[in-house]
Image 1 (tube, helix red, strand yellow):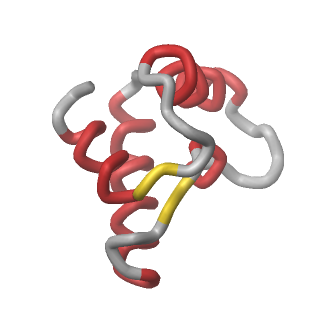
Image 2 (image 1 turned 45 degrees about the vertical axis):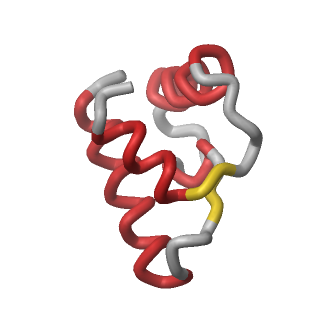
Length: 72
C-alpha cells in the first residue's frame, strides 16, 4: 500500500474517532471521495481490506488505524 494511502487512512480514522468516539466503524470507502478519482488507491485499499485481511464491511476505526500503523 502506498504511503500516502496509509497516511490518509490514519487521518480519516483519527478524525472519525475524535468526532464519534472509539467505537466508530469505518469501511474502506471512508477514505475516498464519492467520485472515483483515484481507482488505483481504491483498488489497493479494497485488496488490503477484503482479500488480504478478510475484514468485514465495517470495522472499528481504532482497529484499522492500528493495523495500518503496524504495517499490516
